[in-house]
Length: 391
Ligand SMILES: Cc1ncc(COP(=O)(O)O)c(C=O)c1O
Image (spheres, rainbow, N blue to C red):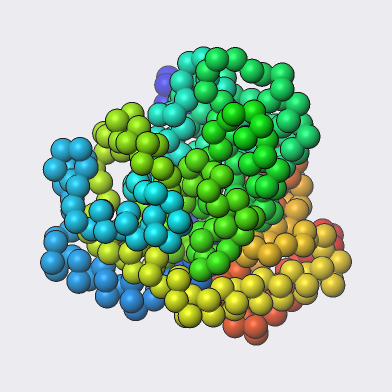
């Protein structure tokens, strides 16, 4: 009976056009094999192309030979190795913070950090379009969760005014919004955090390596360095590796080591991953890193302008996330399928990842795309958009 219930629920997901399945993709380069079809990849977060950079691969291989393949324990047991500490030192220097603390993924970081910092009697103010892992962290924390309208600082100010109290107040926002590609108004949010004595946490998953001086992220890009209590960032996107971190003060780090359950109760990142991440942090600060960011910006601008010229309402912006709003989930899936038939791989993003009625194609650009590949993708998106009556 229980399995039958699951089967009925799955059928409903299918009926609503929200069924998900795993597709096999052989790598993260512009040219990929999706199942058995050659395609151009336009939905990876490998923004700078570092996932296939020889310096990262070499660092991972050397670390495996020197230290083995696992840390084999939580850091509080016997899993705190020299590479963890080296990477945290590099991170803090890059981000300009007192310290940093590693987490096993962005999801583990957000749930672990938020649920550690806030608890019963505390209030979390979260942008309505924040990533699911932030929501999950807030729900786990047992705090009161107040979601404010997307990037609406007037509404946030009103809510902060209305909801005072003795407990901790935490404002959390994505730096770059993962499904829209826009940037949070961090100056205004930092002002509000200071006026209302709230802690500010920024999720920089999509900005680390991409925005700001030496790719330091949205906090640097928006000129609010030193005003954000916790900058969470990930290695699995522009940094071409895996894992995540909080860049923060010594006090916050110490607190998290003592309270964060995803850190305390989980085996720490392995040497291979740590070494690749350290190589990526070094690389994004070099001249090569700067050139990759420039290529990424040029490629993003090219895709945006080709789509806009054809009549798509693509928001302006400086990030590599280029959303094409479709609305209806079934049409979005159809669009994505047709694109793959034409050799362009772009995933459709549907609820619950985005709000109902806002299904979209989330195109992402990489520094490793050639202008010709961007033009091919744009031409297919325009052609199929017309075929499906979306354009
Ligand atoms: C904004 C944001 N935060 C957190 C995460 C989770 O990071 P990770 O993939 O490292 O778990 C993601 C994406 O996956 C994200 O887009």
